[in-house]
Length: 371
Image 1 (cartoon, rainbow, N blue to C red):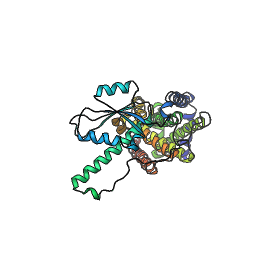
Image 2 (tube, one colour):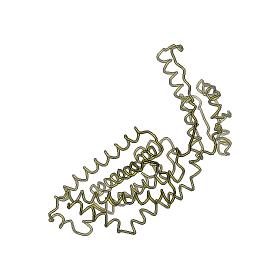
Image 3 (spheres, helix red, strand yellow):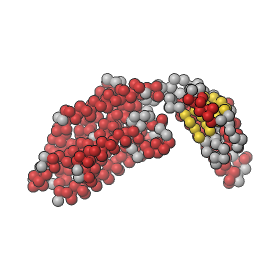
Image 4 (cartoon, rainbow, N blue to C red):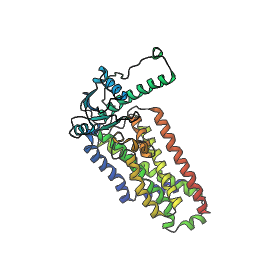
């Protein structure tokens, strides 16, 4: 019961801090509208005409010749329109002038590497080019593996690189506002790390830690109560943003609303654990808040919060796996648009494991401090 009282008054105090609450809610609501409107074209499929691709023809290697033959197949030509140029500079001019969407370059004596340069104006066309080249690379690797193993051609079962399916994108892909509603909601959850740090530091600020130690309270009751209060505050913030965006911005949150809210709860738990652990390890609220104020925008950027994940470089995509924002984004997108259930389970397990680990560290550190 004492823990519930502490949780209740921690939540009440956070909610009554109208200045902080307003900034926590107003910032993501304004940002999602600005970003969703400004970058709406990135999420639209204007046409599914063949994507214009420039192929640089500056060597006569076997890889380039095989790639040429692959791109001239009838089923490939239906989705990719290839033009050959003599040098890289000429191809780059076409990219910059908008005459082509992508450039494919096979360097001289490059040990089988294919370089691809794409414009950032359309995720859909970019995925078309990437999937076509992935099909070629997979086919080439398979053929090379068969040769290394000494297999006979007659034993190889041919397969189609391109599979035809009817596309009905209605309701199955996010609009700009849908996407940024998710990323800004997750960003709000991550800014909740400041609540976690403040809840642990407030007793030092108000000089009440001595009374807490002498009061008929166990240290774990104080710890659990403050953590629970912080989590409830963040769930409250998430609920306000969810309701506002659903009924004012008409954001598509899918049909599984309960799981979306559970994901918000999961992110609230993680954010609280990060904030609490940061303060427990650093021991100074000002330094902790300064660290978190730098960390959260970085995690938001890596998680695709400002620019879509598909528009990032390959190196940035690898770094995104370190961001809880990215994991939360993939969980929500897969839930709303009926994506990979395996990815949902794996990423959810990672978030809960990280939270548990950070809470254990915080509890051990806090127990030593209250002793």
